[in-house]
Image (cartoon, rainbow, N blue to C red; front, side):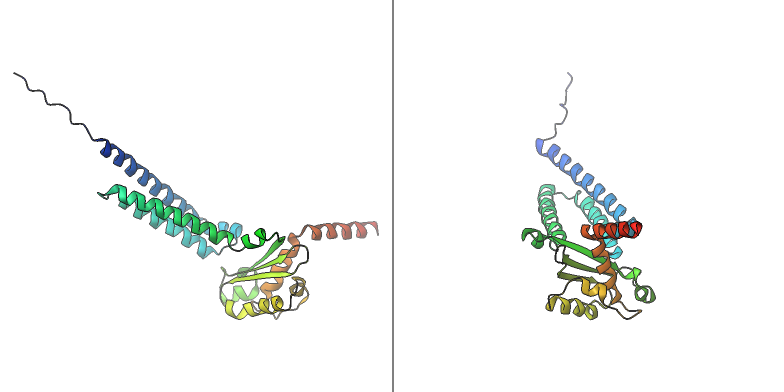
Length: 221
């Protein structure tokens, strides 16, 4: 007499857990690769986003460590509870990231304000090169029609000593032309205001139209 032992069958829950485990490890791998990409290309990405290189590198490093943590959690015995926690965490982080990115411009957009931005990086300023701060950034937000200054953001060394200049101009309702026409001491970080103002004015369509008209007049003469 021959005894036949049936092949063991895996419960449906086990197959579901295996799929969840695979999805978590895939998510962890992709997050780590994206974080590594951001960390390696921190400087070029900073030039595109306006953030500092340190901020870009830190964001990439967080993604790498987060991916490693998720990969490790994929081996947890109570996988479903871990998976639900990760889903909630991803939703919270995504919403927070969107708020951080939009907080500077969203209120102006909702209010129907036409705005433009001018930026100056410390590494473009002589004083920034002297002190070795190549990650600092000054940003001016102004009305694209009236040129009225709407906000000032500064990240970098001496930010608390520079912000009062922008506060003063905001206080008397000045325009970005104030910084264009003002002479700042050299070499100081205050020059960032002038560089950012020129950067902002150069972004205005009317500036290019005026420049084209002046070029045409000079050509005719």
